[in-house]
Length: 92
Image 1 (tube, rainbow, N blue to C red):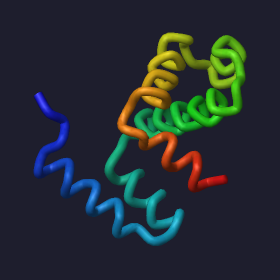
Image 2 (image 1 turned 30 degrees about the vertical axis):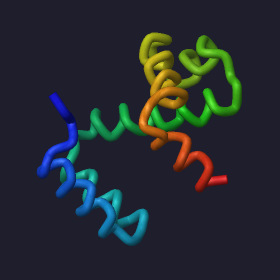
Image 3 (image 1 turned 135 degrees about the vertical axis):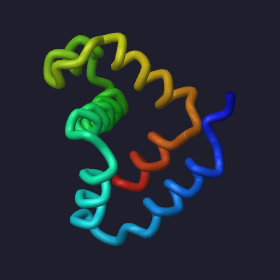
């Protein structure tokens, strides 16, 4: 099963229309539950910490995440579609 569908493409096109952090906050708050936003933000923080070379256990303690989730983020950071890497580089 592919995750890329007409519907996901429409969602990503909608996201690309956002122009400010405030717009993104409003859109994602309407789109996602608070827990989903919280979990995505923790994964993004984990990706940044992994990129900085912090040990998984330290990341887990700081973010209150399982090392399994951190390992999953690390896998996608190193072997995924390149999305994490793209944004990490753009934010430098």
